[in-house]
Structure formats: C-alpha cells, structure tokens
Image (cartoon, rainbow, N blue to C red; front, side, top):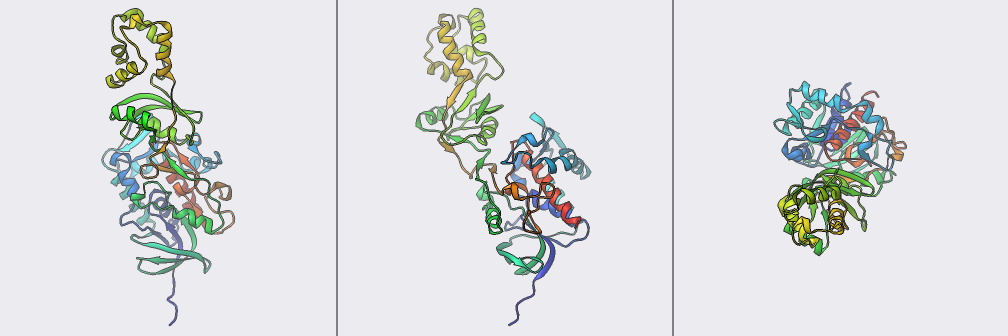
Length: 403
C-alpha cells in the first residue's frame, strides 16, 4: 500500500497559547500557509485563567530588566521591537476595555476571553488554520524542513518548512503542561538550561509552618528578598506556607538551602518608629501599637514571639531593638516550593545561546524557532510574561513572513 501523502504547510506552530497564536497571526500575514496545533480542546487556556479571569496582558513598565535569563540581554531585541504600547494599540483596535492596577499591571475590564477572541480573530485574518485536540507523536527532518506525525488531526502527517515550538513549560500541569518543547529542543541539538518552578509559593518546616497556619488568610505589606533581589508587595500567610505577590516574585531568585529576608515595615526605620511610639503612647501594649502597622493577628503573634510584657513604656531600648529587628529583618529558610502544580511560570528553558535574538530562530537548524515560555526568558509577576509571549511571537512570525 502506498504511503499516504503528507499535507504541506509553510509553517506549523506547536502550541495554541499566547505566543503561538500571536506568532500565527504574523507568520501568515503574507499568504504563507500556517497550521497551529494543540492537544488541548480549547485555545489559550492559560490566558483564560490568568489575572483572576481578566488577563494581566502586559505591564506599562516592561523592559529587559524585568526578566531572568542566563543571557540577560537576549530579550532586549524582541521587547524593543514589539512593545507593550504596540499590544495596547492592538487591544484598543479590537475595542477591548482595559484598566491599570498597581505597578503598571493592565487587565481586561470584562474577561480574559476577550484576549483569546482577539487572537483567534487575528489568526483567522492571516488565514492560519487551528487544529485542537491534536497530539504530536513525533517530529523528524523531512521534505524541505520537518515531518510531523499527528494523532487527532484531519491528517496524520504534515510537512513544513518552518516549525515553531510554542508549547510552554512545565507550570500548571492540570492545564496540560508537559515540557514537551524541551524534548524537541534536545532532539535537534539544543541545550536546555535548568528548569524549576517560578512565581510560586514557598513552603517551610514544621515550626514555621505552624505559625503560618495560625495566620492563614492574613496579608500584609512587605519587602521579601531572595538571592539579593527584593520585592515590595503583599505577603500572604497560607496553610502551606507563604504566598502573595512579594513571595511569588522572590521565589524566582530563591535557591534550595538559602534564606529569605522579610521586612514587615518597608521604607520605615522600625526602631525610630517604636521609640517615637513609646514616647507618645507608652501606656499602650506593644501588640496594640504594632496593630497600627500590621494586621491585628500578626501584630499579636510578633509581640508574643518577642516576649514583650507590660506596656510599651516598660520596654528598654534593647527590647525595642529586638522587636525592630524582627520587623525589618525576619529571616526564614524555606524547605521548598509548592512546585509546578501552582507555579505561574517555568524558570529556565531552551538555551538562548543557540537562538537568534531578532527572530528566535535556531542558529544551527534552519526553519526551527522557539518562542514564549519554552525559552530561557522568564518575566516578573505582573504581565511581563505575556509581553514576552507577544514580543517573541511577533519576532518569529514577522521573520517567517519576510521569508
């Protein structure tokens, strides 16, 4: 029996997420035949759940300094050529209402589904085809490029000149994340840097965990520092440890065995403040005074932990200094993280040393591209990773369209 003839495309994109769909909209702009495949039953599932269902789609302050990579300069080209302002213009062109929250974070007014609909519309305008519920069984060199063997598609074998890997990392496996892109990278001779969960809650040993559980649900402004980098946002106590934006940010810089440092009074000299309160409100209990700065449950816990008895006027300078140190430099050693199950992103990925910064193309495999989370470019919390998806998808897509 003769072998079934393969269906031919100019470009096949593996992954119908943010980067993949955006790449498809640009790769097909000059008439090239483009196919996007994904094993999921719906496109853009991580977009749908992001930002509490409203998609934190970019950040006003986005720049190369907001990303981690073995090569911190790699993302500069794509981010500079397709910026947050370019994406905002596209959002407005589709009449999607948006608003800014803290720290330059932009969200849809209505729903994250508006962003998915926009991407599908842009993709359709470019003539790109979408094949969902489709599994890539294997890929190999074939024809004038690549041969892909598929399950669940209208055809079980396709060939293409360009292959774009946009299938993300390992984070949130319940959404279908597999790390398949790393296997394809290695198959074609690309190195993959260490991968680990990032933007993820931290876990602790029994003593610290007991205190966290007693305060579960309590949030407080804080500065959390790990690996020499600190973030000033909210901290949240949970039944499993510590979370909240400040902790999630710091988790990307934390390594096993290292301490984190927490300031519960960022921007304030705690000892000066306590001395002033002693002079003005000496008859009040320390926990009552601390409750002006912190949530009441946390204030009571710290006062008890530091062993302060009596009123604030009864406390010596040494006692206040001990309390100030607890407020400004609370050091803890996490035992780990909650892992990929709750991590918002994967740190590390396909080594950028073998990728072209302008196009995200492989330096040694013609027609092979890597974009989005699968690449060793990891953004901060707050819309930065979506902007990397847009910028890298645009860079690869326009390079493919230009031929």
